[in-house]
Image (tube, rainbow, N blue to C red):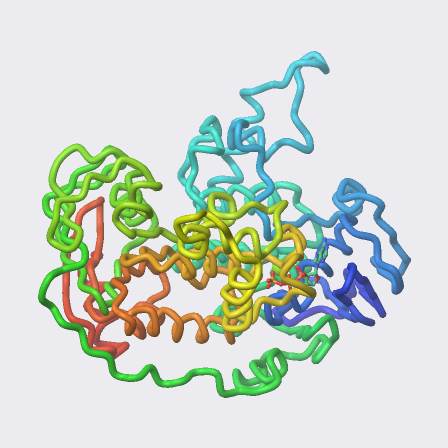
Length: 503
Ligand SMILES: Nc1ncnc2c1ncn2[C@@H]1O[C@H](COP(=O)(O)OP(=O)(O)OP(=O)(O)O)[C@@H](O)[C@H]1O
Ligand SMILES: [Mg+2]
């Protein structure tokens, strides 16, 4: 269906500053009924800030919002919801101790006799929206027991359940797999065809071209494009609108792996997290890819390796010697095994501290030396190297992590682990939420770390990333390794091999 002429929401000349940062400068965007409109730009470009202004979380310093021709001003998200705008925020916004159903129905709990929550109706209604999104969890499940992907889908179900005419989605596919993405896109296309106006933020170019009708691009808080037709746009032009140039992929230099003593050897590993009979070897200098669908048990295996889940059988050898890993601290301090978790934002960062404090928590020991004394200068130089390499956008190293954009927070937690000089580094979905330019910078960094002799276990749902970086690939299904092969880096060949293993 063609995009209609009906303007659902008009943003004009909106500006917003934070101390030291001009987050939005004179930004415009027109959202029409019956379109999916992509909002793209590098980490820190201002996408989430714009969404927070539209949804009443922030107030603009200048500029206007119009809906159906008349000016609107929302003092709170509740007012925006009442005006028919719903949104999926970039940061998960669920109440962990509440059930899935309660979270979905939070804004309008059905009550019995006007007082008591009517749980039968809450759960029925919630179930309906879970089905729409294709998520197979019970409405009575407690949110804190869900995976990152499931939480993201619950958040989406909640936004859909409001049945708004304007739907804003801030990176809704960041932590869900291609399989779930297909499901979500079908839902979004259905809504578009019913005249809903959809704004969609993503760092994945394929998604933008696959799903969206028009595009607005932000760079450093300014429009480099507004409301352009995607049909008339190619990938190179879009990349250059975002980052000012097109070429971002550099060839990774050849690297050889000596397969003598494995840095990590796993035999018959079984753990409470569900891991069953897992065997593999990982060598220094090697990137070993671990591929699988959501629920395949990859993060659970990682948890068993770092002592976060109890090992019930089998053994782990580090540099040939048996390792007894009872906690994450054991893994890092005794055996040099670091884990950059998929939930790194909640597990790995102290949001109310500065960038410098966050990154240096794990490098503390190395820099502090045996006296436990830490030199502010050394700390600063290590941290600023990573800030530069990963292009972390911040007015200063003393900025609170809480004030950074979502992607830049991800980068801080990666930097924190990369700085830890672990011998074995397990990296779970490294490029979630990270912009296209930094993604390739990060690939180079991972490659460099392996080149220095680190052993890297790379968990990724992104097939191109896996095929680019891995030396060997393990495929996991039902908590077991079902295949292992050398990576020829030939995309078509390897992706069809992987798909065969999974079906
Ligand atoms: N509450 C805040 N306090 C201070 N600075 C902020 C705050 N919120 C955002 N910023 C800054 O505003 C700029 C825009 O951030 P925003 O979150 O809108 O980026 P984004 O485009 O959504 O990036 P990402 O792709 O990483 O999510 C960034 O430089 C960010 O650090
Ligand atoms: Mg954002």
